[in-house]
Image (cartoon, rainbow, N blue to C red; front, side, top):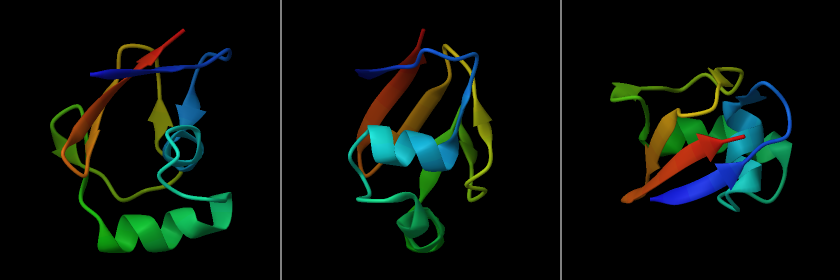
Length: 69
C-alpha cells in the first residue's frame, strides 16, 4: 500500500489522482474516472469531487493507496 500524504483535513478524488501521478493535470480527472475503475473504501467511485479523509483507502489500476496526514 502506497501512502499519499496530505496537509489539509481532506482532498478531493481529482486532487488525489494528481498527487498519485495517475493524471497529469486536474482537467484529466473527469476522463480518467470515466474510463478507469476507481474503488474508494470498497465502493466504486466516479465523482472527482469526492472528499478523501485520512485513512481512506483508494484502489486503482491494481494498486492501493492510503491517505495519511
